[in-house]
Image (cartoon, rainbow, N blue to C red):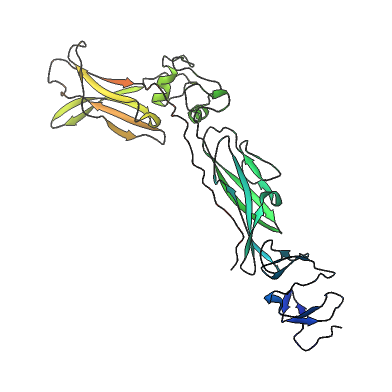
Length: 332
């Protein structure tokens, strides 16, 4: 039985401290002499709890099966009622590392950072070669395209997830395809398994690998049809010749398509007007040039298109400024 003196007693009811203390020792608690617990009195240990430290004049208590001590916070024991995990940086360039950490929220409106080593973290989505150390360090290998990796962490019985963006900053550094001058993502999409050369013709269809890339056709599958289409378009009572050719959208700003026409196949007049461009699909567009002179204007006329293949298909590796978040202890 607790024997109280002249002031209020400390009661333990459903996990809540009530009142102020000046009590004698009991089986569970030791005496606190004439002090308001919330005003700075350090509480001695008991059979169930232990004083860890006094921060800012108040006692920080140890944990139990249902309660956790908030490290670095001037408070008592509170339930962990929320968990957030993240990485620093939030966007990870291939070949780089990121640190996993968490933020635990408590039912007294405080929060505290949880180091990655204390989180039971796993990949809940495809990792794509990304590794995670027991200390909470994520390491990304070279990748052939941007990818998202989902991390899942558990702490104090709660689970949270976070998506880490792994960025393909070097477009030509992946596996057996590295360094051949062609973007890795295009080669993977086309089923290429070994490095290409620009002048080579892997499928022996008469089109160099470089032209296959500009046209966005498969360098491993022999093409039997023409890659250009002839046509006509009516305007103002006349018909005009047209030539339409595929173009990889990735080179739309570097591979020039210019129309030209001739009356004798010797002298050619290059067009100064830009060709028309329409989208074919997500990766390919159709470029069309139209003759300046209508059909029948002269005895004969010829229309052609010059395609200039760029020297480089792969941009220089991009630099990425780290972007991250900082999770720190907070008080209400």
